[in-house]
Every structure is written in C-alpha cells, then in structure tokens.
Image (cartoon, rainbow, N blue to C red; front, top):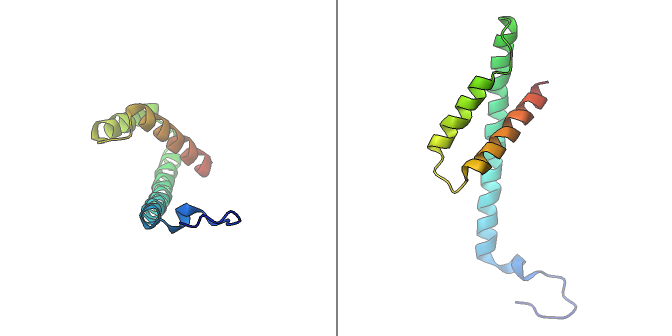
Length: 99
C-alpha cells in the first residue's frame, strides 16, 4: 500500500479481490441491461398485439400475478419489499419506454 502523503492513488485500486468482485458486478449489470432490453422488446410485441385487438395495455391482475410468481421463486437475499420496489420500477420504466 502506498502511504506517501502526496499520493492520490487509492489503496482500493491495488486490491485484486476488490477488482475481481467489481468486474463480476459489472458483468451482472451488463447481463441485466441485456435482459431488460429483451424484456422491452417482448413487451412491445405484447403491446402491438393488444393494440391490434383492442385490448388495454395495462393489466393490473397480470402485474399482481407477475409479482406473486417472482416472489414465490425469489431465493433471496432480495426481500419481498425489495422485490416489490424493483418490480414497480421495472413496470413503470417499461411503460415509459413504450409510451
């Protein structure tokens, strides 16, 4: 570790374990973005189909079912409260993206 008073290098920058963990987080983040983009594409297809058939885009019963299903299969450590917040944001963002 560099202990020079004038040094601007962070001790974190030389920690290989910290770097390894950060690389894993970045990989997971990239996977989540890829999955979210795919989800938006699929929901866009659902929206087109519903529009063509005069079906309302938003279906609160389906949204409740989706949360309940994910809550049952969630192995944690994300809590139900955290999952509810995440899902709420996911649905809101999807709706905003698709206008």
